[in-house]
Image (cartoon, rainbow, N blue to C red; front, side, top):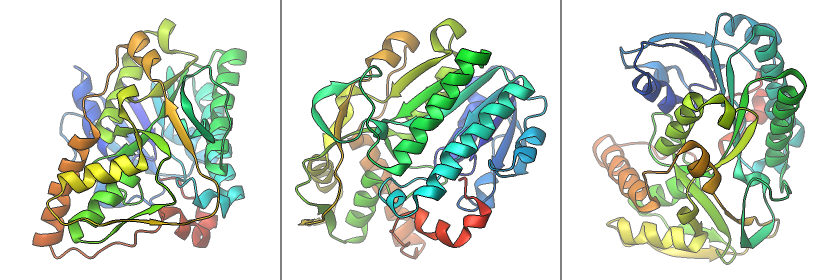
Length: 343
């Protein structure tokens, strides 16, 4: 089986390429597609010998790159995107270009190359707004609260249009907010950031009241959901949209900060800062993926905090780690717009 993973050097992709070989009995061939504008080449080090790997430095905005990379592929997992919901307000055109037009290129190329299955990574952020009073499922109305979510939702619509019109075998996965350790660790995700700050002795800063709700999922469970979707029978997975996470793992931001404080062995201070602007609060129901695909998460937020704290302590105490810039990664994209960041 031959797989192509766009954004394969990113936060999710760098873990996925290491876990995929163990999800199948036969040896598989994995092509990692990335332009390395955010992901780095060292993400390709120490890969398991159970699979054969190939790296393709390419761009989802270049159709010729996709056509070449998809030759003789069976499955495409489309992770490539610019992330950062808040930062998307500062550069909406770039987010739309990469996250929607790039997805459109992937979808068109999958059809042209006769791909057997496409997995599209979307987000629960598409529900948006102040909607914490009820659980939102795949039939709930969509109100993208920012350009990032808008572009992701338009990508979903493109996938489903090609399924309806041309029978493209696609599954859309709306992931909860990720957290947890991966080779391509991101520091601008709430749980990762809070835990890192707690470990190095910095204050945890929460904007406004901290009463907004979010669903969360460990990156290892995200990877398992992708492999579950690949292996699922066509009649239950193709042409479908699934929320990916656990209904029990919806938390207020204040609750997440408190869990970090309780599980990191430091005197953690939590402060609230007033910040104007849009706030997103939503509880999500994940029963569909559990009922139809038999998927359930294995990690809790507490599990993830403890894992992150252990890894951060090793890095910080033993390696004299330089504290990274904790601003959102998408801010440096502005300087490199001509490179069409995909990681």
